[in-house]
Image (cartoon, rainbow, N blue to C red; front, side, top):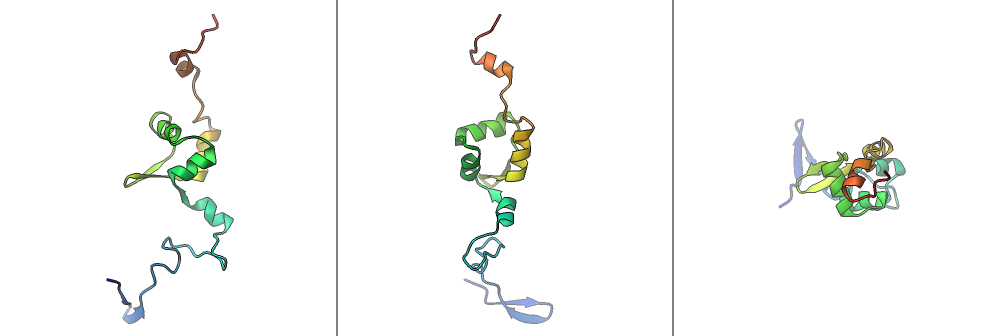
Length: 110
């Protein structure tokens, strides 16, 4: 069941199509491609952030849980802002501490 008309400020207008902008509120250009600025600002999925960082899903889930990686839970899905993840990586958020390497069985130099 679809709404065919919308009552707005005393006027009856045709309802906007759910599919007019790809369902996400963004309008692609004539070729159906988003601009670089629009791509930078959107939420990334777990698969996209893994591909961007070059790591596995398990690594990203570990970073969220143990290292405070900036991520937002939307229902059962995790979403990421590229700019927040970049800032987190640049601040050393993904770096493994020397203590954790020792605890894993790393060789002690003394």
